[in-house]
Length: 432
Image (cartoon, rainbow, N blue to C red; front, side):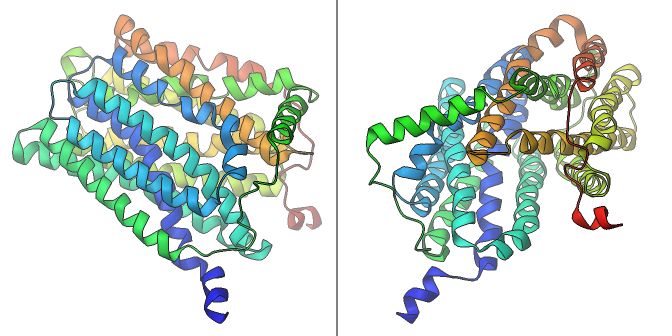
């Protein structure tokens, strides 16, 4: 009995860091690493942006199958099963990269990884709430965010730098990236085995098989109906879809721009240099911006910071325009520009996340927040799909000029957004 109790309540330090590191890695592999890899394989920017933007779809439609993750099997079962499936998908990418049909096959495996990762997100976040009490959830929220960001640094930094090193030493781009993905697949095999034994067994983590199909469907319909009948739903959806409109296009072409030769308007950086720029300088700036954004809102509330944060997530995009105009050869200027844009993005993204939490308040708030994140992914997917086509017709400099014009919808929309005066402000700030 004591042994069972120990298994049911393992020390959170033994599984939360690894669980959220495992949650972050597949997303960065699908959304960021794939873009750089396909660029090194010689794909056009139009194809890269179109194909990789479609990979957002699993996160767009995630709310539609999240109820079934809650009903069928346990959260623990979903976590370890998805980690095994993600590992298999990563191995599939590694196997197919050296083949003539690498594009179709690798995209199919990336789709498999994306769906598995989105399902893993649902299960991991649900398990976190089941396995920890309220005080533990509050304590470890920063820990889980830190290790999720460390996964981003590992994916955008270490993996890209490793691939660049292997490219240089072997002279074989497909082989270099294949080895990189084999290492990532091995890491997920480790996660599968480790979490199979390290995750606790909370008594509340049970499949809800008692629900009839009719009850499930009724609750499913009511959840969506209550969301789309919320007051101000039209304005809220416009905000969610347009707040990152410019950023959604910029993010798809940022790495290709850094990698492309100077003859076509790029900066001609190596794979390893791009890995360092985004995986260390960019990731650290993004994290610092997010932390400062959270502190700012906790002191003065979201309403006070909505305009400054909207400006922070849009105006620093000009850093890429300046890089395209001057094409500096000094690598330091490239890092300063990326750090500036990423800091602004991290700071401005705070308002975006908090607004979705604000709009999701009320009954079904967890499900409504999940729906909001689906529209958030859609807001990244649709602009990203056409970004490559636009860039190849305008060139990099004019594309970044277009990006600066694309911030206008965001800034116009902010004027109409209504938020409660004290939302986001900490109780301590209220007393001061």
